[in-house]
Image (cartoon, rainbow, N blue to C red):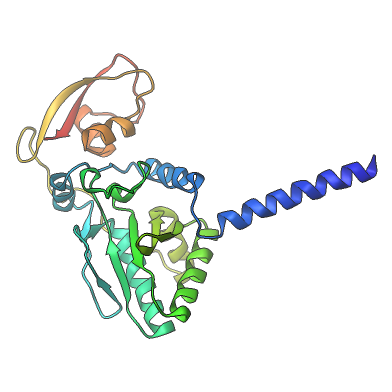
Length: 259
């Protein structure tokens, strides 16, 4: 009996360790994509559908321009915008990367609306939220090893999910903004804040938005409604004077939707 128990315990430990190694291998998985989507939901992020949605989120301050500097370049980036926390991540990582291996980090993709996703993109991709970054894979083995080691370390700390993609060769990084900023604050010993949110209020029906009436269905949440209509949970709360995110099936709400 003891031998059987020991064998079973050993098998459990081996399987658990194998799962841990798989999660820390940069190979990616459906579970990783689900974790990324879960973080997008926890952050109340909207999945932007069109370039017009991207422009509107830039105007509102939810996305910020990402510009090349002495530590990183942008190459082939169609929409050079991302969540403010992504900018902090790129500035820190770019500086460390250049010091470690002597070349610039190269960013190949940032926010990408749903109707501009490549054919091989996963339907679970979080690029439309602005929390994802693609980084070119260097031809320098020393630079590749350094970057992979750092990404694995950060993934192990629960602040991002990273995947090594082959076509084209690059690293897909989904940053978890709030956990990452908490990590940086602990590391630096000071609280780091980023400006994110509406810089101006759009009037209903003006610009690129319109207000519609939506009847809540079973299983709906403010996050799923916001994602479906190209708006934000904050905008839904504001439009309906909601003090919480609780809604009920059959309830009618006003939705400031993207045209």
